[in-house]
Amino acid sequence: MTRPPRDQSTPKHPGPRATANGNLAVPPPPRASAHSGSPPQMKKKTRVRAGIVGSGFSATFHYHSVSRIHGTDVEVVGVHSKDTTGGRAYAESREIQFFDSLDALIEHVDVVHVCVPPMFHEAVSVAALRRNRSVICEKPLTGYFGDGSPDFHWDRCDKQQALDVALASVARFFEAESASRGRLYYAENWVYAPAVQKEREILVKTGGQILWIHGEEAHSGSHSADYAHAARCGGGVLIGKGCHPLSAALYLKRVEGLARGGPPIRPRTVSARAHALTRLGTFRDEGHIRCNYYDIDDFAL
Image 1: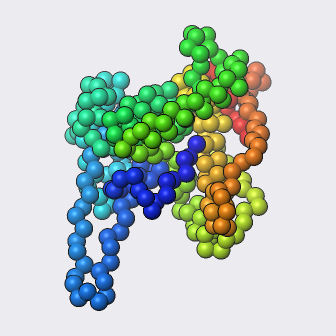
Image 2: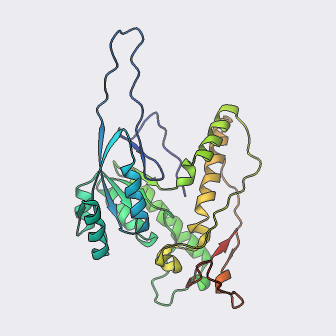
Image 3: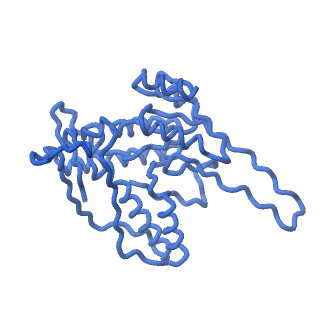
């Protein structure tokens, strides 16, 4: 779901650009003319006020990433969380403010870090964009969160309807950004991994072609309790974990197309398989991987 960046020759507004892992990248100061005889002017440090929505795992590493930014004065003003106890503890341990409402947090910041379960991504992001704040949204950007019925189960849902609803959600994100002075940044960190950026550099400089891409994301299971339920996380590993290598592959094919003087190369067709291995009757729980999923797929290709 990584959105291609706008033409950088006509930025929407000045200021730092957020990378997909939550960091902010500031353009280097202009060089002094060799013939001017004047020393280079010191560029005033940009100040960014950031707010975090959520107080769990992703909120923790977003805060840590922001604290490591150099060249930009980033102040984490505060946090808002529906988990009041956890949110207050998060704020107190970092000596930042706890906001009782999302609106109050948005009022005091320039950038909102969306670190809540995927079922809330759209609502929080759109609310911030409507107030002309920029948004750094965790992955997956959105998904299908069911029909609202208490007995919703991913195995039994209409997958075409799920796709249509998810794409409509993506469209609402982009519509909100188009009407805003803020920007939407999707937090996909594989795109900014050194190995991927090195490959991008090679493609740009050589005009080379990619014949085959193979990517994989595999581990013992998500830390999030919400990840067990499709109605909260929007889907299983195909979207929640597959988004990492898929985003990198789509990004590199886009770079390849532009580097060779053509349009971005986009997929023509997509095929996928998804399975729920840990929900099989023959599965043996030996304690190595998480297996308490309610209705999501836990293996996909």
